[in-house]
Length: 121
Image (cartoon, rainbow, N blue to C red; front, side, top):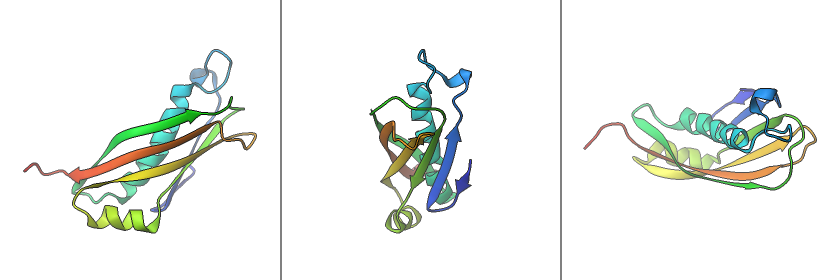
């Protein structure tokens, strides 16, 4: 984790052998996990303790081959943060920008997170 606040989470993943695909790039599933992790940490930072964060869906478009390691930055708007803090349950679409060492965006993604009460009715 490089940075974590209520508004932003930044994580990175080095292009090591353990996460590589057959062409020596970061595997597609590892890219997805990096984006999901950054958005999950961010939502988790904002969800009150009596609520449970849940991922509902993730959308990833693989645009180009990644070069080297990756950096994922997830962010929430002040309005999204306010909704998470005040609504009993809801959902938020979290944009995640993933860039490689060359500064390119090999994937474009968004994560749909929800929150619900931990107490069962």
